[in-house]
Amino acid sequence: MNKRENYLAYLNHEQVDWIPTFAMDQYIVGSQLEYWENGPVAGGADGFGNVWIPTESANSQPALDPNVIPLDDVCDWEDKVTFPDLDAIDWEEFAAQQLAGKDRDERVIEYHTWNSVFLRLGHLLGFEEALCAFFEEPEATKALCMAIADYKVGILERAAKFLKPDAYVHYDDVAAAKSLFMSPEVYREFIKPAHARMNDAAKALGMIPIIHICGYCEDILPDVIEEGSVCWQSAQPMNDIDRIIRELGDDLAVMGGYDTQGPAGQETATDEMAIAEVHRCMDEYGKYGRCFGLQGYRLPNMRDMVILEESVRYGRERIERLRAGE
Image (cartoon, rainbow, N blue to C red; front, side):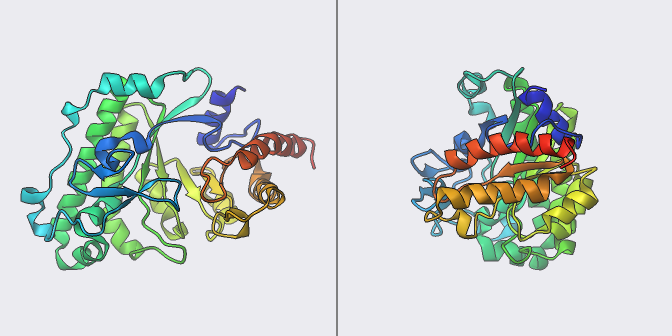
């Protein structure tokens, strides 16, 4: 198989010829370059009125200016929330820039869109107020979550028309390292229906739905499957990844594994430590020959070539050994 065929086999929960590697075995479009979602790359306001500041600690990726809160009362969202004008974007130019040099016969093209339902809710209200809104104003909060989902569907419609991606990834970090930011019940009531709306639209547009969630989120992964996602990206090892692949692998592919919060993920980690962590992931999670892809880095370098090159080499060797019965 070529990269495209192998990656599609991975997303379809089938046997692969090698273990896929994030950002090496697929093309990523959208992402930080959605300026209306994330503000200009150098920092500034996005289309919602949030302001973003580039960081040193996250490889210049932007963080929110905490002093700018566009919405002070969720009940006023219909009057006060400004959604980006998607028709004002030159989608033809955007697509041409994003797709330049990419061979869709060689790799799967994934459209990544940041700031999904929970994240944007927190951006608009502020993190604490967004969590309080679930309990204080549930009906208004549900309506705003669905409005954010509808806006995201608008992005998917335009992405499907102009970029024609094979898959889309929406980023909704609903968890910290030790637990979800909310109970599973709150997630199911407020966030899950909005995710399902987006995923249904993506499938109708011919895109494979994928979700990005960092942190400990294994309690809601069955819900993620029910929403329609076929892959979970940025899977971190505070979750029981081996059990997840064994029990949910018929329905959910896992992309992640590398312990970015442990010693091997730090700037001080040696090449030997990074390579050992790649081997641990692929030996532990890749032993089933399907449903696992490697994603990891040493801060602040999100594209760590030592990790990427070793994962490409060892990802093929691991499957060859598996087929040889080792």
